[in-house]
Image (cartoon, rainbow over all chains, first blue to last red; front, side):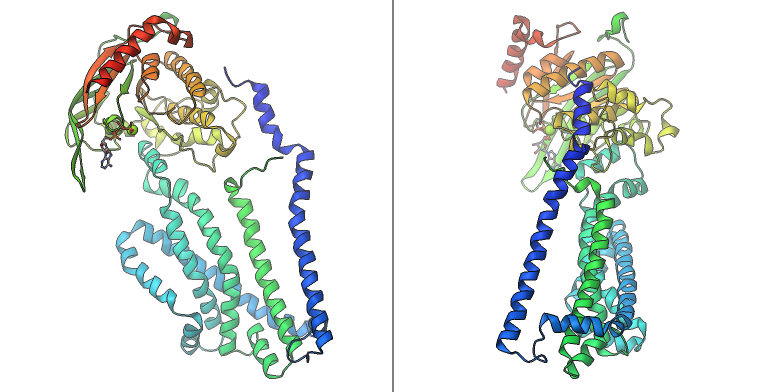
Length: 278
Length: 268
Ligand SMILES: Nc1ncnc2c1ncn2[C@@H]1O[C@H](COP(=O)(O)OP(=O)(O)OP(=O)(O)O)[C@@H](O)[C@H]1O
Ligand SMILES: [Mg+2]
């Protein structure tokens, strides 16, 4: 037999020896350290320019002023972050859920796809800021229009990607399933759905940022709380440090959201990651 | 029929494993109709190792795909163990090995081998199956049960694909250039192992290749095909006894055989 068992053990244990893991961690940490140092550098230069040129705070605040607002206005920020978070998350789940469901229907029914897919593509080209007022008029000033807009903005990338993912199945794998006399349901669950997951996650990652933006834009148009309201009020009152602090909170929210999806992807789509050499 | 010593009697009579009669396959393309196969008839006896040999485009894959119910004939009839390919497919009478291993990347080697038992109402249609673990051992991959396809070499992936094709304990194994993507050393190794598996299991193999040496080394019969339109030129009985090992390739009688096949292929 050409493959000896000692050889096979070698190959299998190669990737889990502790020394290799430590080496990999170190390599992974490097880009993060570089990025953090870079950010600190940019903040320092920013601070120096504002202080050096005596730029008025209402025009562009210094990083220290933004930090000041983040601490003193913390309660206000969190109070307004909460509704935005709820709208984004519910919108995200709703928009992506419907998109995935629709993609599955499209893949199983070509006629429905031919009717509705072009429609979806056209609707997609309408800017969200144009749709938002329409939805606010339709759904009132409560939670509903914000959720709807956040959902709408996450909907399209996921629909497009999920349809592509479900149809991107390896042709030979489909033939294999035919030779095995697999039913349509089996082909779907054992093949199509799983091989579409990398496409789905690519879209979900786009959605994380987009749904926060959607919720904030919706709040601009008509709301009494939320980060979008805070943005508008801070601008009118020339509380520029608060405006910047609000942006920081929104961006942290989107980042955490993004990180959660990346984590989920790592846990589920394991087969896509290449082993690194050590 | 298996003779003492694990040897398979190639001339065993009775019901044919695969029977092709007057088969024509035509494709409608932009440039007109392509006669992929024209009036092809062939009988593969149970236990035979038959290779389809011929230049690119002579219809080898087409023939194999009709047998596997992946293509419908334009004319003529194909029977697998006396039934239509679609019927034989549901009963899992044949396994298929593609040129690319086409393993599911999210399944480990063992899980890939197990796939055929999880779909198509397997247990309802097939009383016997083989243990996936034992099959991995048979193809020389014990210890790699948990490895994922990306962690395996091309040759190892093809071994997994062979194990997967055997798990339903099929009567016929259809292989379309299974070692075409491998280097010569890997190919030689796998050829030797495939012969061992064939002799151990007594399975019927229909094997597509465009390598003269591979066809000569493996087969009990070689079907020489020629293109435009795709048809059978001649069927050669290989007089070399089994078990065969790689040294056989250096013997004069092997050279004579490959020489003859080469001549047949040269004169279209
Ligand atoms: N789906 C198809 N549509 C149109 N023409 C096809 C199709 N499949 C095969 N053909 C044509 O039929 C002929 C036989 O093809 P086939 O794939 O069976 O050849 P082959 O002997 O397997 O060749 P190779 O050694 O290159 O794999 C070729 O001329 C090919 O172009
Ligand atoms: Mg071919």
